[in-house]
Amino acid sequence: MLELNFLPFPTLETERLILRKVTMADSQDVLTLRGDIDAMRYIGKPISTTFDEARDLITRIQDGLENNTAIGWAISLKNNPQLIGTIGFHQIDKQHYRAEIGYMLLPQFWNKGLMSEAIQQVLDYGFNTMKLHSIQANIDPNNKVSAAILKKYNFVSEAYFKENFFFNGKFMDSEIFSLLNKR
Ligand SMILES: CC(C)(COP(=O)(O)OP(=O)(O)OC[C@H]1O[C@@H](n2cnc3c(N)ncnc32)[C@H](O)[C@@H]1OP(=O)(O)O)[C@@H](O)C(=O)NCCC(=O)NCCS
Image 1 (cartoon, rainbow, N blue to C red):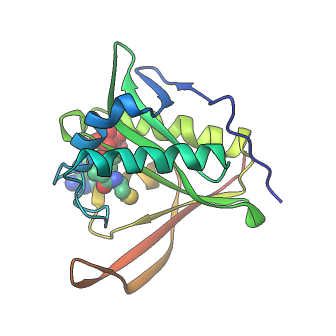
Image 2: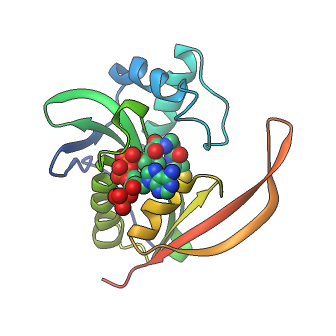
């Protein structure tokens, strides 16, 4: 069985980014991110509109860390501590050494290669430090950018579920991508 310990919190660094702990001081930026209609388009969760929702999300991230059941990083540029996105592993299946990766970024920072940088570092952490055997991503098949990034890091499409996700009164398809630890 996989044993995880996220304390002390593993701050990660890329060429342009710091991946750091999310704190209550990030509430406004989390609300901006989770309230952004474009960033939320393919997330399959309601758009946040209140500070309470942002604070609840931060509390859930902190609980995941304390219980070693999930890890979420705030993404910040090296020259500015503002949270511009999030990335992390949730749905960690310790029995089978598998976790699901999730990520999002504020639209003004898209298409600069930033999430590619973050994902590369987080995959390294997942495979080399957490000792995961496989990592999956569950995407809306219309999310071509997310699929492109996953393919760039050698994820393969592993399953396509038809109308298995009920959201906003509609049944939607989902596609599962996965990557095995071959390091
Ligand atoms: C998905 C997301 C995180 C990408 O972040 P990003 O920093 O813009 O991504 P990058 O710049 O690192 O890479 C984007 C890649 O997609 C490609 N791309 C951009 N638009 C594209 C499109 N319409 N179709 C296909 N590929 C596209 C880019 O060319 C780039 O690939 P390359 O590096 O090989 O050139 C960002 O768009 C986002 O936050 N989206 C909303 C949240 C979301 O959907 N999260 C994923 C849920 S599974």
